[in-house]
Amino acid sequence: MSTRELFTFRNSYFSVAVGLAAGLFVLTAVAGFVVLPRLQPELKYADLWDAFCSAAGLPRRSVSSGEIPKSAHRSSEAVLTSMTLAHPSQESIGRGATLAQRCAICHGPTGISRADSPNLAGQYAAVIYKELLDFRSGARTNAVMSPFAANLSDREITDVAAYYSYLPRLPAFHPVEQHPKPRVVIYGAPMRGIAPCGSCHGSLDNKTGSPWLEGQSEAYLKAQLQAFASGQRTNDISQQMRNVARGLTPQEIDEAAAYYASQPPEIIKATD
Image (cartoon, rainbow, N blue to C red; front, top):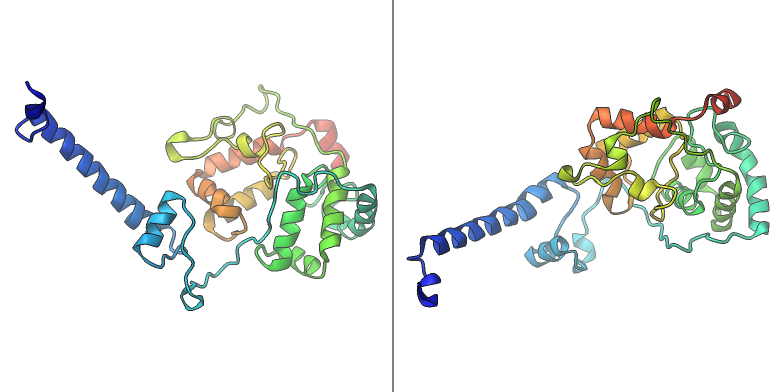
């Protein structure tokens, strides 16, 4: 068969290939511009080109102030880099220790909570910094934390974050026979587009702004995953945690929370 005859519609193989390619193109277009936008109603586009840019990961064209959609939830305005609070000064840590006395009733005098509030001891400074900024701006809300953060200055937020990051954190504790590793933590769920939890929240492989989860309260972890899944909590940058949490099953949420919360018996007794 000559080249000219090969690339003609009289060739059944060529016709089928072209048909499959066209069908795949239509399917992906429908999924990208009809299905996905319906699943994310908070996303609004100025026009078709704006939608194309968003789908391709390109900067979207700004719209006039009258066309900016109003969202029911504020987004995080915190800007983090790998160097955010990477080297806090001793003076900043000392000032933070004084300020943290007001936090002890919920987060413990040494940053280890006894009230299902998050443990802050040894937490990454950038994480505490971001969350306090979000509480102050209203991007994240809580009956206790929102009023507390409302009057904090930028320097006070920096100092508190520096102090808690300086404290020794709870270690990872995962004896296989007692706490088998959940697949979603170690491997994720690739078929559902879910990365392993450890790829962002690991001790060696940590994404800036992602918290250290080892030793956190099981009740707290479950509550936050459920809040992300339901859309009640919306201060994750680029909806990363909401996209992950929506894809988790209730069993996976329970397993991940129990896995990260596990601690040696002697540490549990010491915090009771």
